[in-house]
Amino acid sequence: MPEESVRVLVVGAGFGGLSAAAHLRAAGYRSPDDLLIIEKADQVGGTWRDNTYPECACDVQSVLYSFSFAPNPDWPRSYSRQPEILDYLVRTVRDTGLIDHVRFGCELIGAHWDGTHWIAETSSGTIRAQILVAATGALSAPRLPDLPGLTSFTGAAFHSARWDHSVSLKGKRVGVVGTGASAVQFVPAIAPDAGHLTVFQRTPGWVIPRGDRPYLDSERALYRRWPVTQRIARGSTYLYRESYVISMAHFPKLLPSMQFVAETHLRRQVKDPDLREKLRPPFQIGCKRALLSDDWFPALQRPNVELVTAAAAEVTPQGVVDAAGRKHDLDVLIFGTGFTPTEPPVARLLTGRSDATLAETWDGSPRAHLGMTIHGFPNLFLMYGPNTNLGHSSIIYMLESQARYIVDAVRTLDRADLASLEVRAETEHDYVSDVHRKLERSVWNQGGCASWYLDRNGRNSVMWHTFTWRCRQATRRLDLDNYHLKAVPLNAL
Image (tube, rainbow, N blue to C red; front, top):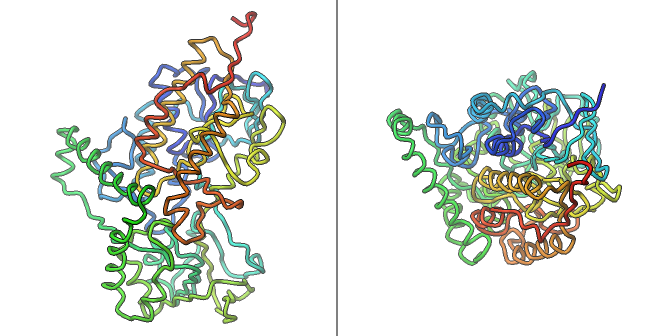
């Protein structure tokens, strides 16, 4: 198969990749030679395509969890479910013309920088690209716990992010390992069907009321007739959520007010003092992701549900042995154990200027200037890269900020007749050092927990350290002084 060439190659058709592609297309990069999105699946959607567990939903309000350039006046609820978000993405791709740029069933096998271009090997052939945008997501690779005997279980077993809908839970003995953001959604949904449901809790999380509600027909009609009203609602929601940063990142001493809400929620929903104590976290709220649920605590108090506070320690052919040595016979085992944001699989596929992969370069601690560019990897841009995750607002705001920066980078290459740009080592070092210095006083670092925000070297390489508008400000334009520049050869002009 002959090698093909494209100006910008985007890997991944989730919110990140589609955001980058949409902004590039709006900037005029809309020919087949300008822009190509490759997607290994047969549908767009990323995490909202892959996570189909019961009651999968977003923890950010619908009005804010959407593209700024594609408002949706017809969200059915204040917090949308997975099918509604996936449908929104499918419609947006169709309505904006992005579908013409997507190649489905095309998986990235590896990519290397050859001195002038990225040479991407895919399941559909070789693609030569001047610019590579890696938008494979931070929450795309499910993490299974390192438990002895994991493969010996004779019943059905799966991760919540790869839910097996062919497995009936009706009347079955079901075990759930993990009590995080996914589990608090699917456990209440499956509890009524299970014959007996065993929930293995290693550490409880703080839970606050979700407060979800259906949108009124009159609200949707208002948004359709006067779109400015939805923009106002979006802006007010943004400002409200942005206020969380004050206590989470800058003044953790203010967090007791937020923790009081969670404590009150726990007391109101759990009357048994012994159970309540088992569900009270030993760390400050915000240290781990706060969980939104109105039905998690009631689900754990159903007569057919058992909360086991001794963590799962071993998997046997018949079930699970907990850390206290107690055996639990199971028919189905479900892992709600999260993802690997600090060990993204795509990092093992990208080889930079020095013939080292991105994973080797990072050595367990992902880092990038503005979460996007890495020294030694010219013309590579990450979407949802290191230190861009949020604990309070919509990641789509961050993704659109990064997308605008990428557009400016491509335009800069055009204006200055540049073949490539590569962030300076000192620029990357100074930026990352500043971020980590500021994170040191945050609840994510000082809240007394061990979370997935911390990488295997103990560094917080996941969380954004301040207000999201600071990201928008920092990514408004590309500063050439921060980059090594390589001009287009004269014979190529």
